[in-house]
Image (cartoon, rainbow, N blue to C red):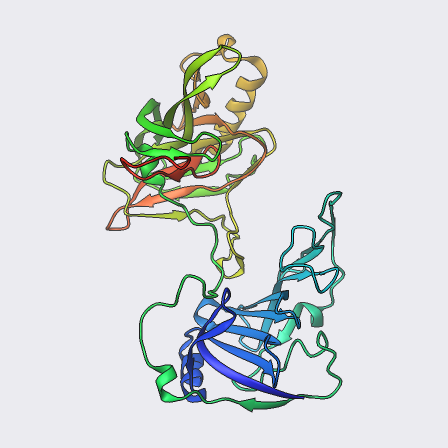
Length: 431
């Protein structure tokens, strides 16, 4: 089989065409510089590509889409370049098992299997039957070292990974297509429909949740209005290391720590107000709900937001929209002085078991009518812990706001997902 090879700046996933074709020489230069480029493999006479590969060494990433004769994506392979420059980790793979040629791409009833692999030998395989009576089955994959890793080919020497999927028994003959000069002209950013390297979860407009008057929706309530943040006391962090963690499980040390100037900081709840018709009360009801919790380090505005990472997190391994954060098995999180973590956790457990009214008021404070539940104080170090409720068990990201100089100005935990902003002064989403 003769396979045409086209190099380009990007691949438009929606149109299934290369964006800004480039010459082999330009692709080689981009490869050496670590800049992203794509390679499209297409059998002569066929409309759908066999496979498309995106290479972006600056992102430690090589991605592969495999297509079938109907033009549907059937496999996604995510490979990562880590510390060994000669090989790639097969980090993540997804396969869609279409039940027939008439089934649409990514149909909700299409069975799917995913495999997560990590360099330390860990892994997980998930089989999803989906459809009306669908479910999932999770196992630990039995993967050899040769299956977990693949050699990193030199530029221009990549194999056709989809050869087996397309039933090829003989090595293909590659025919490199050099685009006309006119096709390579132009500058600017690629369209949003173009494939890009995966990114971990993004923060969204967190600052807006603390700006009164902003209109948002959580998808269930059509319109909610942000009100003045509610002040819930302060938190002392004399060690200069703020911990954000699950006090119910992280007894050996907090999952996340953030350096801050030693001091005492305001605790706040971001809140929204909304009105709806309540059948039980037979009329309009106004409610105020909490959307986020914040430790305010500085009055300076947050110019950027970033997701705080655990000590063992490696950004090079994050897949699209992956989160990191603190875990809880008891629907509880906390902000605390990491320098007094052990004593504070012991005090927290005692307070939860015995109840605050029976304990020293200089050490314990019961917080009512708030997502914050309990504050404890270590007399020896002066550090404090403020526990708060979460809506469920699981993992909660921690967002760090920084000023234009890079200083930490706020640390935020969202109570649920990030609400969507509504247009200011315009119609609501349902109008």
